[in-house]
Length: 248
Image (cartoon, rainbow, N blue to C red; front, side, top):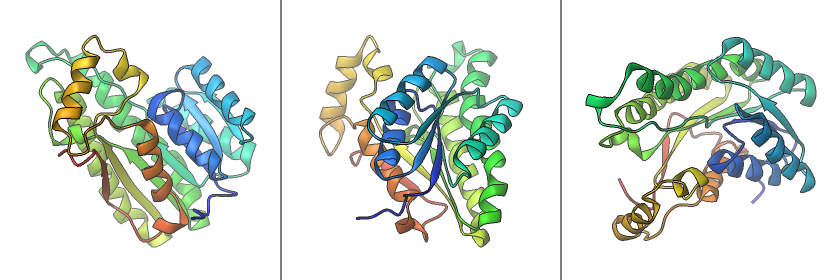
């Protein structure tokens, strides 16, 4: 199936590794030019190099998504380099898990700011381009955790906030043929998850409790994103696509 992404330019945040890297790879494979954005410059450059080596068009940009000036400069750099921007995938985020009785304000702010404020700033920076060209795709990476997880009050709240942002933006931008959707992954087998000291227990639990008895792969999420940013999803907006193996 031709997704119609040839000639389009995508920004993927948090794209230096894990889910973001898989999304960047998939979009490149579909013919899009991709800005690999990550706070870790070395990771961004390494991923962009891999994409170019595979024949893709990729640009590495180191940027902190909660820095307004950095986000503005990042989008300007993408437009100057590729000649435009058509797709935004707000993927940047991380966890800092602990029970709320032990959670500091810094723990709360760090997680919520990157996930929610970062998505807001990046969306605001591209939206004028999308409205002017009357075409645009925004996908916000939420999580099944928006339904609530113990020890993840900050992360669950942030991922729920991303869905609220998604639905509000879809109402604001639909008349300009700009779609805004969210993807909510379940447990995904990323390097970050594999680094957990209790990874084997996580894997075993996923295989035991998920209707499709395996952990998700980053490529599972990338496939969902590729559809939502494609020409094939032009009448899908304000929705949440769960990539959880059937676990809710």
